[in-house]
Image (cartoon, rainbow, N blue to C red):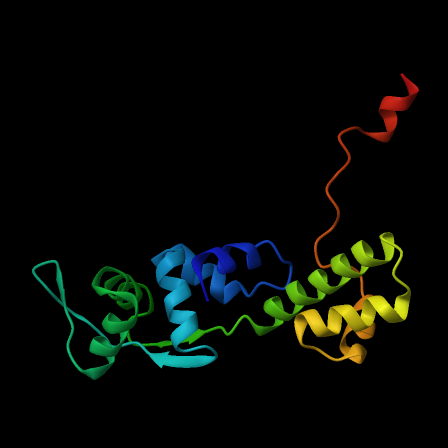
Length: 159
């Protein structure tokens, strides 16, 4: 998952709070690398030893974590989650919600250009590689994100 994709998913109401915390602790680039490498896993964060203000961590868990996110982000994870399990979210629900939003937007675009319901569902299925039933189910749902707010308030009409 790219940092750009992760950033786009952050706006969705179904974005996991665990992913948001991970981004706040180690940054979006390192979080994207970690979520891509170990989605849905619980990582046993090693306990550090603090020697003269410097973390001393060793062992295979530290090396694996450092290989995925880099030394700086690994140290931040160890300081924050020291000795506990870090759940790494997969963000599957947010990814699926975003995909369904894309299906609905494409459907609106195609039917606005004169495509029939059936033809639009067929075209979207081909474009995204999903079944017609998946698209039909998505069309019955509301958009994940609310529409952009209007640039005026209703009360502005009565002044």
